[in-house]
Length: 256
Ligand SMILES: Nc1ncnc2c1ncn2[C@@H]1O[C@H](COP(=O)(O)OP(=O)(O)O)[C@@H](O)[C@H]1O
Ligand SMILES: [Mg+2]
Image (cartoon, rainbow, N blue to C red; front, side):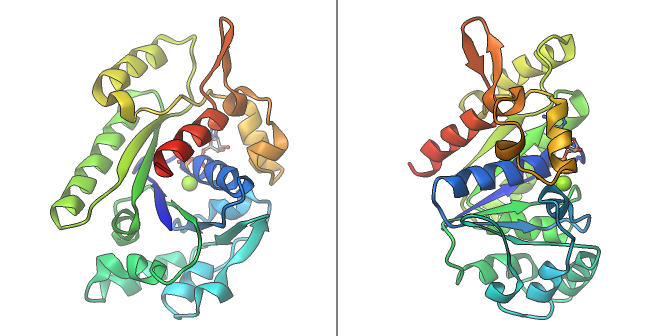
């Protein structure tokens, strides 16, 4: 079992889109995959065109077994959905001893190949539980200075967690809302390459079809497999970036 957190304290950087797209990409490769929505906004449900529900609350606070709270979403893909009751999960966690390891402990007995955690844009107890439970951390970032600051904050938190004895397999930075024609994108992209080198994933183009897909409750693989965001953008003779390349890249590094 490999746990992959999608994290950035900034909102609207593409965390939920990335969690749903990567998880459904891994599920399509025949692996038993789970997404856990750790955000009280419950946007994973919207991405799948279904109703939010308090599954996370039932699992962590009411102590119902994981098997009973998951919903099937696609072939090989289950989801623990979230809604506003997730606020009560945070309150519950703050009262416990070992409060930062609750999620990690609960996941030990699960039998999925891959678990993707969609983290909320805040550095609260649930966010920390997500970072403590994960082997890999993917940090999506828009191509502007504020979002890059969010990347640094996640890395600082991961460093603290490492100092407390947790070991990560690695992290990757994912450039999102990539616009090749703007100076801001290209300046930030150069900074990212210099700072992160090998830990930088291929960029995801800004693409209105991504927003449309979630409005229709479809994954990007179903709604727009040939879009720039999935298949990459044309650069001379080559296609560059896109979630398809990102899935292949991660598949290789994670499966070693
Ligand atoms: N590459 C993209 N191009 C255009 N719109 C995008 C892209 N990625 C995400 N979006 C849209 O931007 C909004 C925020 O994305 P989301 O994945 O929900 O971010 P977060 O979870 O970080 O808040 C959503 O409406 C989503 O459909
Ligand atoms: Mg989100």
